Length: 224
Length: 273
Picture 1 (cartoon, rainbow over the protein chains, first blue to last red):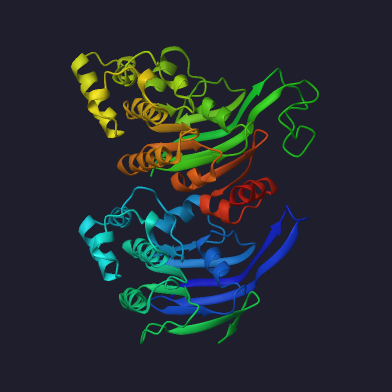
Picture 2 (tube, rainbow over the protein chains, first blue to last red):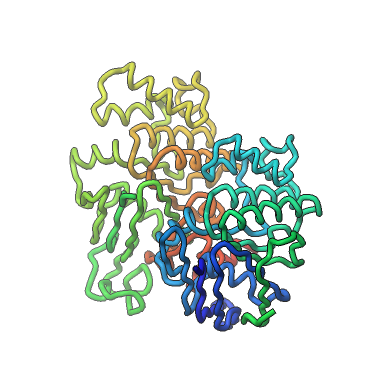
């Protein structure tokens, strides 16, 4: 079964402040992602990888095409679903992690993760398993390094048992040891039946994690 | 989830109105001021639905109509058209004792300026407790206990319960307003620029507090702010208003990441540079 079926997806930006200049970023993307697999998107900067993930998550509003998500017995076309249906899908069915953490002042790392519906102890355990130092668990991430923020961000994304995850360069700022921990966690999620659609700048070097690699070029998917 | 608030085609108008005023968007009545009859349209054609536990942001520059919408929702402002339904009940025309009961019970508001929402001459506990008296509480001890519980829940020290609000700082006054708004366990909480004019550390505290309130209750929240960062932190959905009309509605991350309307693009680009 396909967890994600993208068909004819097009996205262009109209810059009204710059004489309505148009910038096309996706020019008809077709993509099928089988449930329980890890698909990696590759391609140079500006090829449309992140734009594709953002359209699927609906941070970008697609111009045309369909993005059908099938999970937990539900079916929703994220390209056309109304905002409240998208929010509901985000809570239960599809998550997204980027390389940047939006900082919430004053809330410690464990509490940020626990706010996603975990008890504090499992939240702390999740952060430890991703390599966050013990003394940082109760600290608000405002003072964290880029890598430490990325760990918190990934933990927040993994905290909910959502079956489909979109991952945009989630290991970009991590040292090799923590990168390995992050990839191990993603691998475990995939092995437990999760579906991953991920952008990695460098191919993830975790044995058996990647099921398929697709390449994007100028807003289109080409076979890798 | 149940719909806590439904707003349909809401309009607030200052002035008599005329046939040109009544024309839809994109016609001769594009601006907030009608050139024919001189009426000012505070807001018009505003519609949305909000579930219990959901938060909606309203952004737009000064004069765009966002506070007007909030005032109408708080039944402070007579409307020229449209409907406001709270838990399915049409409260648009509520008056007299019904209006007082709704405002003291089902609605809670935090105004931008504390003196709008508080009597600075009376104590923090007195300000909050007055709402319970308005909905019929009679036991002084119970009102006081409830006021103290809410006072402490917004991170104010218990021993300041009997201090007149005049002696409080700006950030503390906003928290007294929050305690007063929440004491009646409202269905709908309205926040009008709750952090503007406060220094950043105090802002952060208020924002955390509102986030906690959202997690711990299923109050529906409408928050007006010109600060997109505040909206991003507190609301999943947002309306962008210009000249009294909603020009864009969407998921907050979508409106900030991929604004469609020229005015939304201007707002977002102005924020980031």
